Length: 281
Image 1: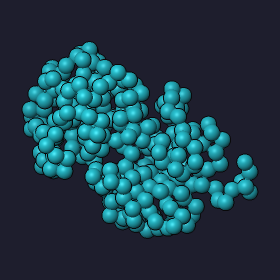
Image 2: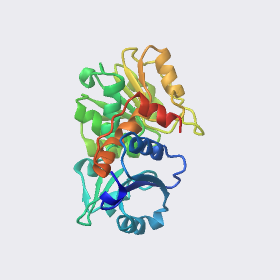
Image 3: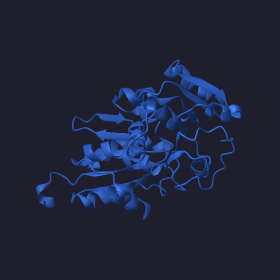
């Protein structure tokens, strides 16, 4: 396809502050090359003060959509014209579509990415097998909890360093969510069949994850949304305890699929080549 055959070369990107660390440009750039699509995906450093102005200008510059990351995900709920039900429930959006009618459409695909990562890397995982234990109660945790409940997990136990955020999450998601004090977080692992770390603890440059994992069920599936390092100390301890473990990179890859399809017209495949391309970036 020649450039002349296109109405406009579609542009997309990721907005955040900071943004230089993002692997999304490498991921989308790989898919654009892989499928022979004429288009571009770029990182954009945008401050909170400039966010509304940037969103008004991007469609005029040829952007068909973008991803949103820290610290702007929550702000998108108030700035978008159309907010999907799941984004509204989660209270944050990570995928934007600039519609031809001028309206800004906001969605949250983090939960989709989380579930599809587990289904791909641990195909025998059964959500209904038992309770889930989730560490953290921020925006990522809200997406994970929503996805787990939709998938059929009977109960979700949450521990967060500041309890009010966990209590707020329970108020929004209902009685299937139970809150446990952070200092007692290790106790919620008893009989939990799915265990998730949604905090930044264990990430390169962050504090260690210090809660005891002695009560881990060796038959549990354990996953960490952190992917730098790829195997966090949390995942290593779970693997050594005999658990099935899934790293967080796949969540990043799978959450990107719906946006890429809407912006560029092709549904990309997440496979070993995709992982290798992003890890090499």
